Image (cartoon, rainbow, N blue to C red; front, top):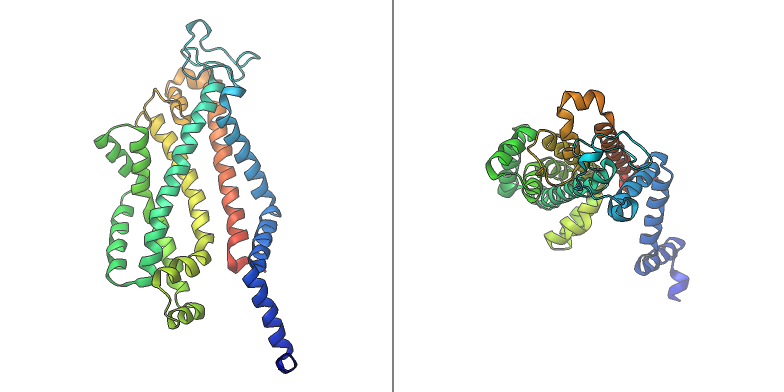
Length: 307
């Protein structure tokens, strides 16, 4: 008798409930996001380029037979050849080997700094935006102070105080870079917290942490992901700029920026293009690929852009 009394709408709701309990709707949503990402040609191209460069740096010992620190004064400033694909630098080190091994450090600095800054910014920004009040005001003032200085100037100042080190540079990037993603996350959460489903969750008496991080934060991931990718590209460029000036990672560690450091010599810049041009091209291509991936993730994961 109960089945006879159910309307068509009730039956449809029962089917949806069963699918949700079985996890079918979540899988369908994930598949749709993946299809949207794969339909974005630039995002797929960016992912392929990113993967190729990343794998090349990881498997550098297999790809290249030379050590990035091996000095050979008899073969200094050799142009590209079959023996040395990108030639050699002023003290005979293989440029191709230095690009591969240097990419490990540069990518680690960029991705690690961006993820560290994102974790701090997202965790604080989500909760501060949801709760408001004194905690929101405190962190808002702190972020405004951090962002009132040009980041590159602030990084230069701190590096000159604490000294040059790989880990020092990553920590400095995190401490100076979390403010922008904090403000972006906070702004998104502020707009979401007035939604009807959030008010309903509050009425049911759910814990604030669960409401904030489980139900609200996933709807703010679009802008957060694009900010992470932009931060990754920015930190890689900043590391290259600081190392070019001799204030980034110590020169005894191969990074893309340290390879470009030799281009300060005007004779190298004019006559030995193979020392700096391949490295600059790799940096530009890698940064573009990261930005393309970010755009694809934004379009595929942002709920407001899904049909």
